[in-house]
Structures are given as structure tokens and as C-alpha cells.
Length: 199
Image (cartoon, rainbow, N blue to C red; front, side, top):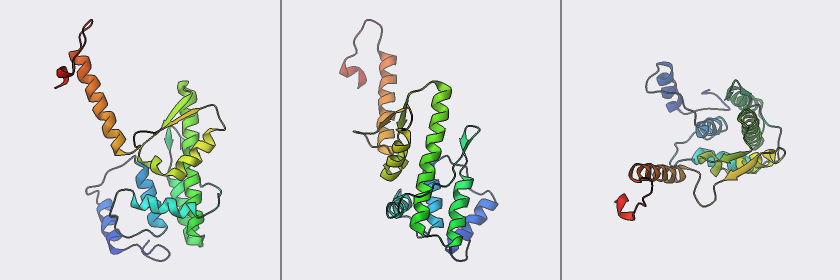
């Protein structure tokens, strides 16, 4: 991975040594790390200076390409398997496919995998509504792709409107849950809690 077309910088070798020795490494379920990995495979190897930078770069690449055949992102045994997705990205990069087209196939693959997962989960739990939130849905292209795929089915889609889908929205939700939890602890049946009860 240190050779063309990847040519990762020296810090990649240092990180790989940590991974191989299992030093300060841990599994993550963050879709953002999947976008980071793909961006690095497509050439974004400089240091990140703000949250979401590599994912934003990847989204902009994908926007410059026509809709392409999605890479596989299968939903198997209750989990999305990212390995075929990243393998397809790496293989097409080695073959010399245009990076914008790879980015588009990746984004569409993520959307299709999410659609498949949502369909299975909603059917198994008898749900007719899904909420698309989290930092990854600041990626408008991904959101547009997934919404277009979900309109083919019977699921109603809710997205963030007044509250951001990223950590800002999570913080607000945590504050709301804390407030409701405190309300439940203070409020007695038949009584009304005053604002001073929360001070």
C-alpha cells in the first residue's frame, strides 16, 4: 500500500505497526471511518484538520461523476459487511478507474447497503418509518441516494430539519433525555412540576 497508486505517507506504516501489535486500537461501528478509509484509498492522505474533512472531499468527488453501478455492501446476518465495498474500491483504483467514478460507486453502494438493511430490519420488526440521522447524513449526496432508493418501498423516511444530524443533535437529544429523566424523578402523579423544580 506504500506504492502507486496509493503511496500512503510514512505515518501509514507507523499506524499499521500499532494495528499489528494491537496497541491503542479498537473496533468501531462508525460509518465515518469507512468514508475516511475510502478517501485515503482515492488519494486523500494528508492530515485531517477538521471533523469530516475526508468524507466531504469524497462526497465532492462523487458529485462530479454520473450515477454509477454501486459497489457491493451486503447486509449479512444482521450486519453490513464493508469488506466487499472496500475491496472493490481498492481493485478499481489499481485498475486505474477514474477516482470520481469510484467515489460515486462507493457512495451509491453505501446507500444501497443501508436500504437493504433498513428493509430487512423494518420488516422483521413491523416498522413503517425510519429515521436517518447521525453525522454521515450531513452528506447530502448519500441522503439523496438513500431517499431515492427508499421511495421504491413502503417506508416513511424522517430526517433532521431543525436540529443537526451530527454531534450537535446528539447533544440536544442527550440533554432532552436527561431533562425528561429528571422530570420523571421529580414529578409525582397529580402534581405539576414548576420551572424551579429543575434548578
